[in-house]
Length: 134
Image 1 (cartoon, rainbow, N blue to C red):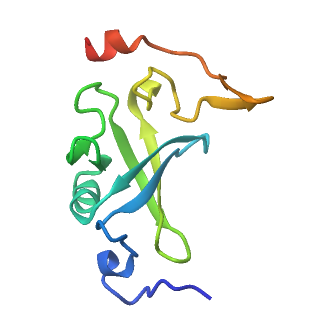
Image 2: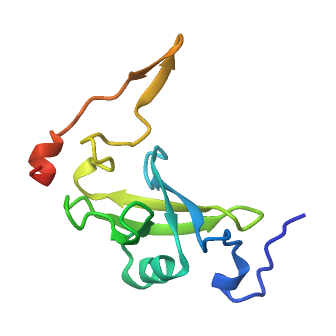
């Protein structure tokens, strides 16, 4: 049985944590590859729905983070889903530029456990200095 009440207003139907956040997974709409994980608050989710581009809440910057605002690697949202409990979001996205991670990789999930070490299993597609100029 689901805890999500589909008759409630869509924002209120979701389960927000004590900081007003909801975990959000960004997945490539075509390949299904998980590209990144972030948090959204109600404001970022509303803007995502209104604009069609992914907007997250940056906990480190303590502000809205419009994906691609610095890198140009915008995420166009094709679908938004939630789980049966309404406490996690899944965004099916089109990743512009093919890079979702600030390290210059396709996905933030590039470390693979090999034996007892985490090994970078995916290549850097573009040097972060070329993306961000840092």
